[in-house]
Image (cartoon, rainbow, N blue to C red; front, side, top):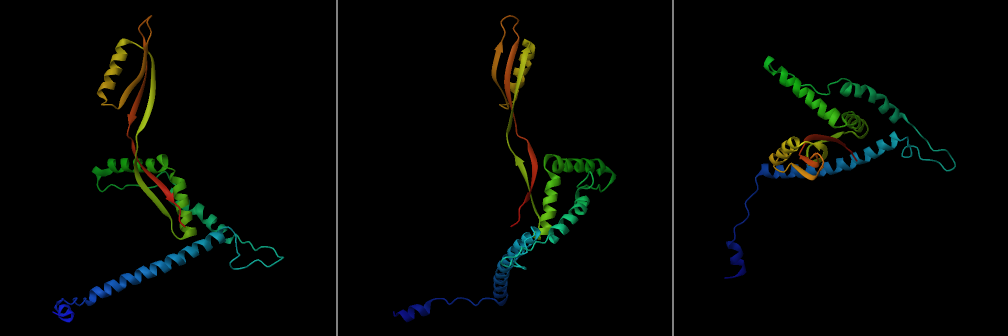
Length: 217
């Protein structure tokens, strides 16, 4: 059998559907435009930061022997807008509020409102996160905030002095029932009156929602 005959026995690739081809071309076009837009956006952000810092070198190059041109117009406008915008987002005690659907939801909605506001403004630097987020949006065309659930182990150390035998027994029982979450690391007993002093550790696994403003470059 010749090579020509072997080749002729192979299956020829099927013809691509027009809709499939159009989808592939559209995807390639979108990827190409995204790259161009990203490059253009990065340049615009660099220019915006330079203008914010008063640097006009791009538009008005410094002439030899002459002073450098400085303009604070961009910074003045952004800083002038910030108080008004921050008053909108953080001007009240409630950054967010959950509205009840019916009368039976009022208590739960209030609890959710209180909890979320506490997590954002107390457990996290909520005001500064919003401030950076809004300012980035004005200056860099986009503001980004990253939110995540943070789980970590924490250990506290406590010392108890001059416990009676009954108090020590109760505390020792709590340690035994804690399944390893508590541990007595040292203890002493006075021979005169039998008073006990102990040092113990407690482990906990608190979880909280964390938020942080992401820098944009």
